[in-house]
Image 1 (cartoon, rainbow, N blue to C red):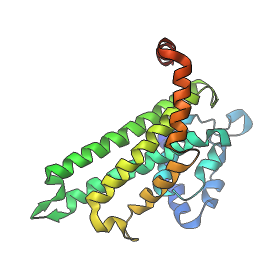
Image 2: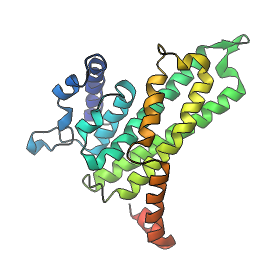
Image 3: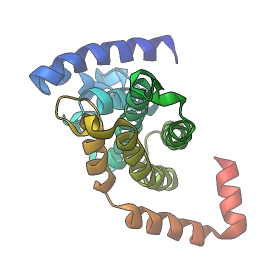
Amino acid sequence: MSAAREMLCDTARAVFAEAAMAGIAPVEEAGFALLLVSEEKGGFGGDWGDANAVLQLAGVMVPDLPVAGLIAGNALQPAATVSLMAGGMGQALTLSIEHVNTRQQFGRPLGKFQAVQQSLAVMACEVRAVEAAAGALAARLDAVDLDPAAADFEIAAAKLRANRAVGVVTSIAHQVHGAIGFTYEYELHRVTVPLMRWRGEHGNDAYWAAKLGRQVAGLGGRGLWEALTAR
């Protein structure tokens, strides 16, 4: 992460911490609506890599606030939702690891049981795959100057991958937490509930699978390989 992006993320953490109590106003006042606006037009001059980093933090800290709508236009909302989902899934994994390392069962931490370790390994693979998809999407959008039409393939692939990971991630997270994961006071539901909501936003699994399938079929075998290697 570049020094500028790290500073941006530090600012976002502080602003989102305030926004979690005060609502969207601190985010607006901090100028995050100008994140993708060029410096020549008075903005931050950020790229989608910056937006991806900020939105992943929003997915953890303020999942119920319209941060994505503030930063990105309508055409880029599916891409923004992938970033929110990546952040939420990463937080679910972090909470799950912390819980199994502290919760004792039969005289030892839950994390020492092989079945729990295997479940968390599956969960971690899903989370990292979504993070990688969000990163690849960010790289493509930056390469095409944030043109969603030119990144249509990556948007469809990333949203579908994120959608398909939600069921695995949320179910394992709640399984390893047990009853405490469903309580209002515990933090887990604050990311798993939004994840289920984001899964259906801008099109469900079937919508994105069909969209991606039409593109792949249109390219053909050789065309698909050439298109992917050219990116």
